[in-house]
Length: 260
Image 1 (cartoon, rainbow, N blue to C red):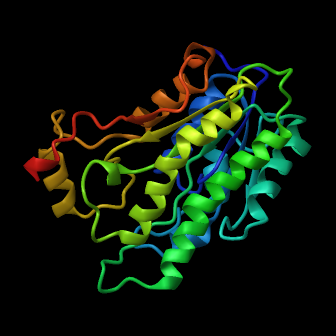
Image 2 (cartoon, rainbow, N blue to C red):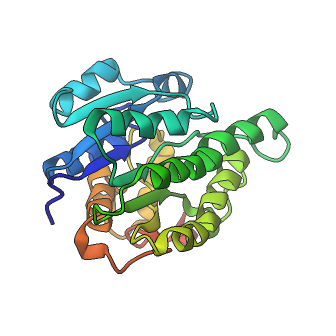
């Protein structure tokens, strides 16, 4: 399942505890060259905060930038940013074979707090940027290179309400719904498009009460780990998953929401 000679773009790699970090590490371990994208200002304004070691610490933990690892910082709320991210990968490594759009803007607004500004921002970062990243990837991908892969990320909004996170849930629902159409748009080129719902993953954002409550609803008695997500994505971008496209995969460890 080695990915030697393939070039991957992974967005949302700004914290060592995050899913993006685990994804980048897994692809590097499989032999890929990887461009990681970050936007630390988003983390800095969230309760969990930016990585204490900064983005440089994240890159160092991945082995440091060099022949197989590059980095670009970009605010994906900017409509021009997705194309710049993909162009950076092509300029650095000469090609792009894999896109993993892991980035997300989190937002806690219920119906009474909902604002047009936050709806627009979550839409721009989560849904619009994902679609534009796929567009830029498709334009840059050389179909003579086999194994074109796109993996997007949604959440559990299609399985249970997320009424306290409306801007986030609505924008993630758009990713869920765009998956099949994007897959169809690229199927004749041999490029697969799939979406992962990773379920509750411990990346350091949840407080003790929520951690305990969700833990009781997971048969394993623990939250998912970033490495659990990385194992699935590593398979989806490999040759072994060439027959899988247009799917939204719920990888939640048997999450029993009704127990919470």
